[in-house]
Length: 119
Image (tube, rainbow, N blue to C red; front, side, top):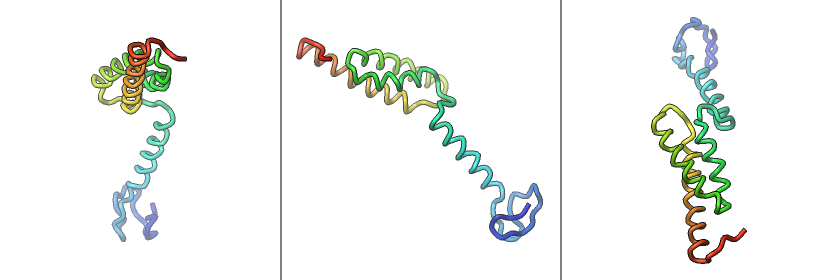
């Protein structure tokens, strides 16, 4: 294998370049890591089903009658997430919790203060 920095020939299993001491393992590891990070930000890889549902229900919480459902599902998703620390989807769950809480507060306001739900 040739060093990408100085062009020196190295053993195929070498960790560092014999001439410039560049870490020869890092570039391929970084590329693989970046590819998986980019892919997991687009495709819900490693996320629990409830975390995905929680995120989408968080969007639906803009309609006040759906907000309590988003809040309840997000709480259940958070409990499940805490039991499975290797899974991803924390951001979606937090979004569902926040949007569900705000939407539920708006629903309570509309019901108690205004006495009606506006569509």
